[in-house]
Length: 369
Image (cartoon, rainbow, N blue to C red):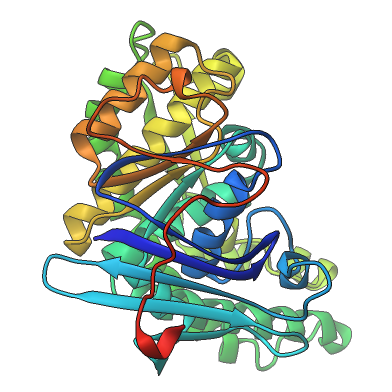
């Protein structure tokens, strides 16, 4: 799968512009403020229905306008599809694939994006939620049923927490109504994550061996399920019932799971690695994520990197680019200067300027313009 074209209408400062992309490495260059990150943000929004820069979609609408639209032409070996997402407040985003209404899960399956920017390694080190999202992303593509399991688990968790907050005088009558579905889906989510961890560790060993030079520090991913490993979740829920009733929420379960990156001495890489090493390891994690998708989903992922040169020396950048050119069907990378990327004749370069996008406008489909 590759992204062949991107059409932006009233998105950020793009009034009506289109860009074309090719397989391999695509470099989006230009001065600060010319729209490099906005292009990558639009692709991310089309895949996931949200921005990595703003929590509110209305902030993405061009000034003095009241709507925006993004259209992507996605090319597979056998077919071409147009994925379109439009937003006009106060309505929610509307998504279509070749003119047919679709969900955000449909969009994510069609346009699998692996995204990295200058804050990826810091977010990953700071937030268990980010690490769980990383696992959920892998499971989403590895197991078709996982999204449904997670949705139903979260619904049972919400209902259980509501029961805990409103339990009269600590009574637990009726709690089993929510414990049963919670346990059922928790076990399946946990099993999926355990399998994904095995797949990630297999891929990560090879990827880090190439990217991690000259560090050569072995790192292993360790999964913490969200409850004591020496007992079942059912027993953990029973043991924590008193505190659950007191606090009004569930302390144990997959929603409290975590992912740890451990060195041979048991320490965390976030305690021993420099910022540059942590960022390089974050790239290795993302590339292992790509391997999981391609091995389980039989589709390639598009690697999207905003400001690759930041906090990486020339040697590290060269190893990353070498990996991308060898292992990725398509990558989109932004930066200020061409000399930071060791660009070859096989790469595609888009030079954005503050006064506009010097690209030929592309008609995706007659019905989508």
